[in-house]
Image (cartoon, rainbow, N blue to C red; front, top):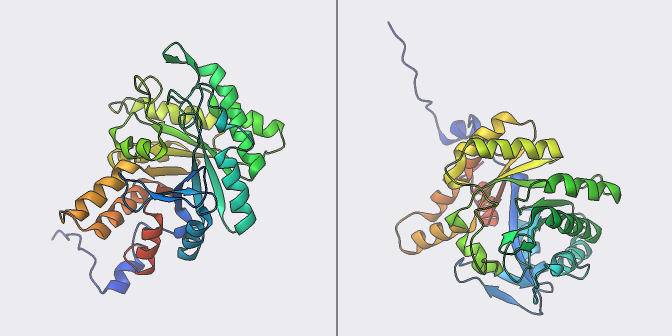
Length: 326
């Protein structure tokens, strides 16, 4: 007689005890937008519940995250002035550099500070590097990305995360950090970053939409699986310590593909469009917000992610406290 496999039975305590996928607060990273000015806490219209903070208001949010158990943040800067060279990205008095120094002053080593390394928020044209005509000039851009990463490390960053998708940027940043005695500052590379429609609200939040054209020449075609694997393996060879797959929701196959092929941690970035869809759907009463947040997060971890970057980080920490995720 054939014995059919039986579904696990038992009470809620037993079901939690034998869960196959575990999620921990230490795996969560919260993206925070910092901007020039004073006494500013302005809600982002396309991302209800998310805000742009001036440096003096930022500590209040960081304290709330710390109380919730979310001790890792990634900074995105919004400068007052932009230029063709994106000079605000690597200015020692740039917005991210000021935010890092203030966060370190207020919280010491209690928070783990990560920085996004890119040019798009700082260039007047909105592209992720220097231009030659209407095309991004890869190699000269590497010098400025490395300079930006170094300035972040000097200001107190624990980790840098290049998101530009220029060829060779991980190696350029690694060399620059090592040559300046920041050998222990790891690189979390946006290795598998698709040209996606899910980024719209972020570009509104950071004011980083391209002034012309798009970013398809340096971000990846969402049809391509092998290209993503190739990009991930290249970044490992160049010295990346963690790889990001972005977006998360529609690309969990790539989270699995990459995590199966590399020996370093893989992070999933649940991006602004994913956040906005959940908030809009919940507001209309079409979905249950907490259930959606929980399933999206666990789905990424189940696919192989070890780190989860999400605007819902504080909410997820609360769901863990309730035992809904864990």
